[in-house]
Amino acid sequence: RAAVNSIFPSSAISTFVSSNQKTKIAFINEISSIAAGIRLHNWYGQKAGKFMLDVGKVMREILPQMNEDLFEDLTNTNSEIERLEEILLDDGERREYEKRCLIFLRNYYKYIKMIKESVQEVAVHTYKLDYAFSVQLKELEVALKTGPFTKADKVYPSYKDISKTWQNIQMEGRILSFYSTLYEELKTFALKFYDLELRTTPELFQSSVELNYENGCEIETQRLMPNDVKNFYEITLEFQDFCAYYCSMGILVPCKRELGIISHGNTCYGFSTMEALEFFEKKPLDSLNAIKQHVLSMPELILTLGMEKLFSLSITNVFSTRHIRPISISDSSAQTMLHPLEEKIVHSYHWNQWKLRKKALQTVDLMDKKTHSTQTDTSHFRRENHSQVYLPKDQSTQTKKDSATNVSGAQILGRL
Image 1 (cartoon, rainbow, N blue to C red):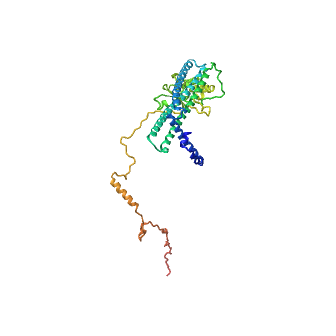
Image 2 (cartoon, rainbow, N blue to C red):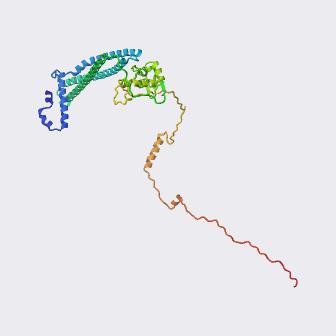
Image 3 (cartoon, rainbow, N blue to C red):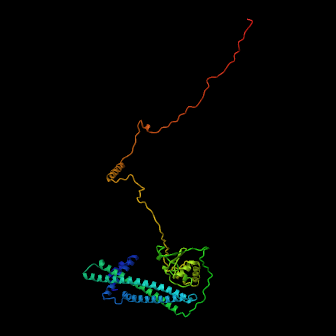
């Protein structure tokens, strides 16, 4: 109350009441931030605020203990997973309870690891904010001892920064509290699972749903080695990097990429042993169909193996990753000419800058010119003229007629 009265006197209440709602909200937020900064400064100087909870100190005490508990839990869970793997690899055909325990521990290990990474991120942010908070308080303390200055220009912004940093520390504390509660609930659920005395499970559920990989023809498989592809260790493997051969038995065993990857269709599969790889390479469809039957009988495998899309589930899998396909490597060669010739030669180019300058000036000078024409008496000689006449016809005339006459012959008159 004293902090608010020092920055918001009673004489300013009338102005505050007459303001609109937006201005009131902004003013209240600013006053609250400055008042919180004043209280934090007084608390740091041990003048007042002893009732305030030191969130930074509490988190500095809780974070190491929580990280230690998470690390110990991860170590114990990993040891239990290795023990179950040895049992199932020796004789895993009829040990349904151990299979379910292994599936549960795999999921539990992933969630605990995710919580540990998130807690470490919270710890980093908390240490940075706590250091920034201490620096801001010391700078403000030094500034207050230097002499008089205007409050609105220097003091109030510093109080706002201190209040904002403290709010961020409190937010990190709430996030840490959420992860702590989540971890406790997971441990409680895990203890209930461990306390189960039922060591045998009923017969597997026989589903009427048929999931078959066969498409009428056998798809060829291809074995990929580190030297065959460019991104061998970044390729996304089916079934969340678990061995496809042992997944067909309901056993979750991590694969070993260095043994090789089998590419079948548009997906890639990893294996834990060379025998498993060779068996899957010969009969991939048999193993894939067996995996589907195990998933139908053990629904917890759907998200564990990343098969939610196959069942059209509208669930976001937190363990899913971006799908990366292999990038093949092939040997290729290219031949280039020893002395290549320029195909595009600009004949108008000249290396002499003075000639280029002269040509540029001529071009600029032509920009101011105008093209015009005049007509004279002889202008018609410069154009093409055409005229049409009637050509003489080919005619023939007859001027004479050839004819002949027949005259009588000579007569002799004898009596004369």
